[in-house]
Amino acid sequence: MNREELVNQIKLKKTFLCVGLDSDIEKIPKHLLEFEDPVFEFNKAIIDATKDFCVAYKPNIAFYEKNGDKGWISLKKTIQYIPSNILTIADAKRGDIGNTSSMYAKAFFENLNFNCITLSPYMGFDSVSTYLSYKNKWIILLALTSNKSSLDFQNAKLKNGLHLFEEIIKTSKKWGSLKNTMYVVGATQAERLKEVRKIIPDHFLLVPGFGKQGGSLSKVAKYALNSDCGILVNSSRNIIYASDCLNFAENAKIESKKIQQKMSIILSQSDFLKK
Image (cartoon, rainbow, N blue to C red; front, side):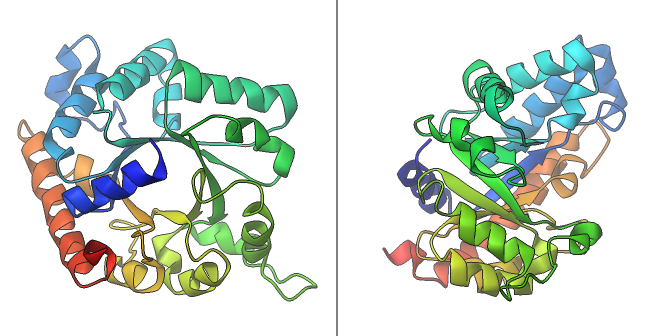
């Protein structure tokens, strides 16, 4: 999916919601365990319930890897089931160089056919260059994450006066383009989004940390919304685990619709829908 297609979907659905498919077999409703592939059945129901209210899905790869071969099968079936007009993000946080990064790119972009992958930029340009060679695929670089310990390194002040996360963004924005590079900036770091936007005013941002982690949707929009919307706000547990009963999918639909309605109001008050 290219940038224009993503922007058009945001306009059409009036939402910038990304649903995180952090699907844990130990947390899904117990009645699904009767199925041959419980995780896929769970994801399928969640997708059917939420697809009208979001523009992206983000499976957290760790939740599938832990289930071994069965997990990878569940993941592949899930990606194949997601409608083609919805962005797919492999939340894999990979980061390696040379032939290793090439193999990761083949796994996620070719074999699983994800649109995007989250990457750690710590090892530099040659750890992400392979991914950039794919047409209509995106890298999403970790910049300022939503966890408490992000302050251990990401906020460190460098000799040039920049924080480490600012230096990462400043340097890496030259690697790709607006058409193939996004950045992760946590919703719990909302006020730092002003600093981020000074460096990359036009890039898309993937914003986790909304919901259970305490991030504010209104603050994220205030500081990060740009002329193409430019933000994908992720919600995982609030939506997919809204209920553990037989009606879990209906509850997921209700929660995702609530968020979409808030986002629709935010977009209607911006210049984005007037373009």
